[in-house]
Length: 117
Image 1 (tube, helix red, strand yellow):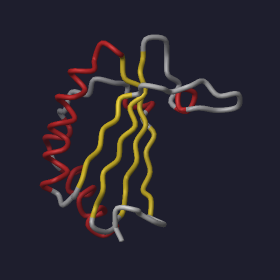
Image 2 (tube, rainbow, N blue to C red):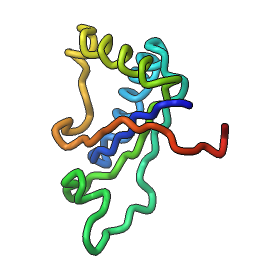
Image 3 (cartoon, one colour):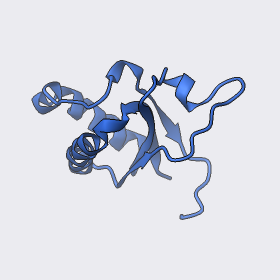
Image 4 (cartoon, one colour):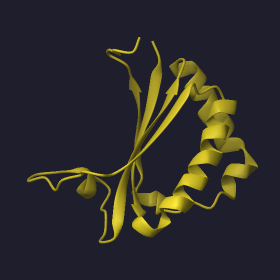
């Protein structure tokens, strides 16, 4: 079964197009490294919670929107190799990100089920 990296990040609302441009570059990069799918979602209905929520998870500020995305890999091994190659690539060191990377949260997830499979 596939392996998934998930991401949540606050992006200044005015940087939506700049984010899309960076996303296109990252998608091409991920695909080159073996990813099978990259999904980017711009927050449209992200409510404030009573105890926690997406905004608090990334310390979103006024004027920032939440992006939820994931990268699907054929396996954890391919993902680990891809992430290692990405961190060693000089192009990644100079990438201009349209958000505060310190507030990005991410993690790797083993799939439990997939209705598309």
